[in-house]
Image 1 (cartoon, rainbow, N blue to C red):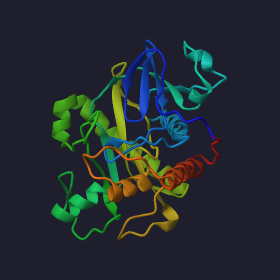
Image 2 (tube, rainbow, N blue to C red):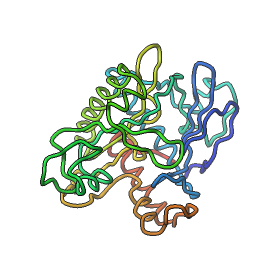
Image 3 (cartoon, rainbow, N blue to C red):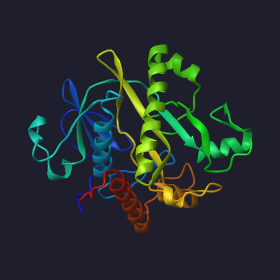
Image 4 (cartoon, helix red, strand yellow):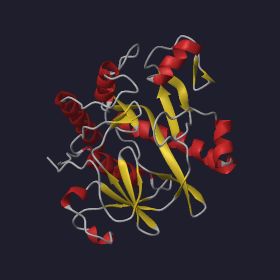
Length: 295
């Protein structure tokens, strides 16, 4: 098992997010995916061993697959072999979890694509017949596939809750050109990724992307199509009408929902929940890429 990295410590730190730490290298950034895990808008004190490596390697796999269609910020995953790309010394714990990327100007919104009715979307639909204010047909069940994927942007909160916004509010936030590119590219990415994953036995129920300006173009940034940013279901066990077996951090969400009250300090996770999460992340990686990931 790889070394656990809860918090990185390198020169040039510019941002410490819920999971990733970002370092400024001039015209490039180094993004280190730690083993921190967040759920229900809180960062938990218990690391999930190897999680950062899964996120980095799976994001790299997707970035390379979509680069011919959607431009993105990915340059390389830092390994022992290419460590010269970084202008300072890295320890063993950083290899495989650190990504060198182009420095883009982040657009401060999250772009969510929903193809199935689950989570907060299912809750809203039961109450109002809508998802993020978008009317949907009557009679849908939990986990049903939607007639077509929908785009539901949200604010990007550094801490606390993200808030759903309308497309018109997105335009006010980032401008018409960027908003249109974000919507079109989000739905194109989701449609493509859903097809690729389904061929490998995984349903991507929903996912979120982030974008930024680079060389006068809106490009894909951050991570992409990982168990942190996506809801992965096992296609072989898909049965609409209730919750689905998942390959993401649902064990963490479920345990928190049953054992934590919002406003209280985030609790330590039981080892069983940590182990279940590691297993799901590794299974998702193996099913999607066809390769085993050594931690």
